[in-house]
Image (tube, rainbow, N blue to C red; front, side, top):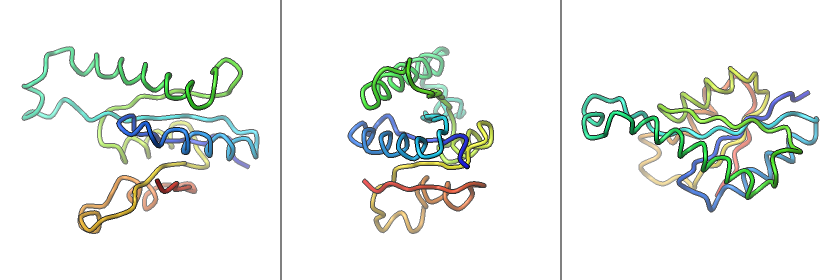
Length: 144
């Protein structure tokens, strides 16, 4: 039985939100599971990069990401009042934060989008592949 389906979306690719969110909602509906939607923004605290941003840049980025996440979910799944959906914004390395969130919400399924791999992915490894390799639960990958 699935209690929580964690779905990870990338706010920089809104063209994929509807496919990923609607499929995750269908999968959650099969077992009456709740849906947790996470997005991850890059960490601004790196010493080299951090000096180029104002002190409140990270706080503003997190707030804007939360607003965008709410809008993306509402735009794809409708009004959140009648749904059992948790909105989560994390910052850091995408695959690490997705895996940490899956542990925190005790997800029994992770739904994640992935692009078709190209040559460089065989050396670097995309976030979706890392989530698949390291997740403690099942992972459903949706190809864009």
